[in-house]
Image (cartoon, one colour):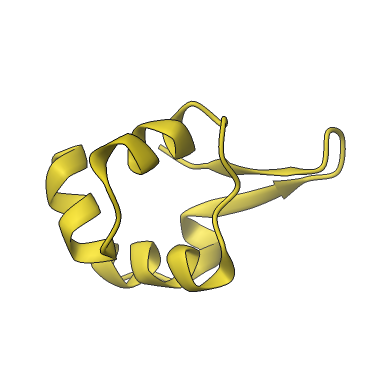
Length: 60
């Protein structure tokens, strides 16, 4: 799936997806859920929480 296809399914810009992949942006819960739904998996299969620094990582 391309960044643009995922962005379309999640209703965000391609730049938002790129920022998530680069760990420059933490998704809202709603966006995380939309992305997980686009992949057909639970949200914890797409994102993991890192205590230090406090941010979410986009699993690849």
